[in-house]
Length: 297
Image (tube, rainbow, N blue to C red; front, top):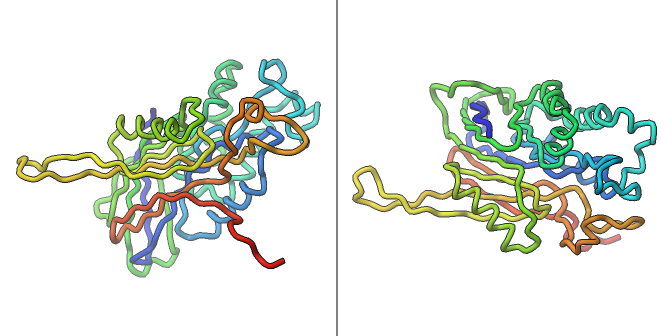
């Protein structure tokens, strides 16, 4: 678990609303990955001046020949046999190419259980470190905290700018303490997944808790009663929690996935976001789905 310091976000629009995404469970190298959803989310983040994001781990599948889970039918059709000799380098290049255009908006870069298992088994943990170093983003490993300080500066011309810092700013409009974890467990029910999120919320002191791994979107507020300094008044502390979606389709044509065999629920596609207005200190966590409703052809 990493205590990754501060992020200082300077902006000029007084009532700006910031979107904070958890882009997780991409699972590159799997044939079921929806690259179009990933590209669309990256473009959305790039086009929005007030968007920030984490990469929440499992950015690649890392199930290689020799692994008992390896299924050649489920492997990315764009990967050639000769690529297997340098697969770590290929994935590294792919991830860097995807996220380089938005690296200045990155709050932190995590690994997931797929990265940890494969890299630990093959003594290649340096691959994750190299990706973070090349992108110049904070390496938060499997989980960690960060404090995001929002500093409103009237007349700020650049719209919004974020810097990494080991120390907080002297003055700020609002501070948002975020805890992010890749996620854990194998729950296949809505209640089981929410319970995993609740276990993280109960474990930490944060304003926003984000996790992935479940391949489904959930958002919930959690309240805890706390007395004031002299125990004369009872207040409530609110922690907002979210579970982000994935880019790996459970059910896709042309091959049979591991999730299909196990009867897992269909995946909720794309990244979940939290929205925060520093001026009013309003934090919203949301579920989102694309392509809802029918348009005229």
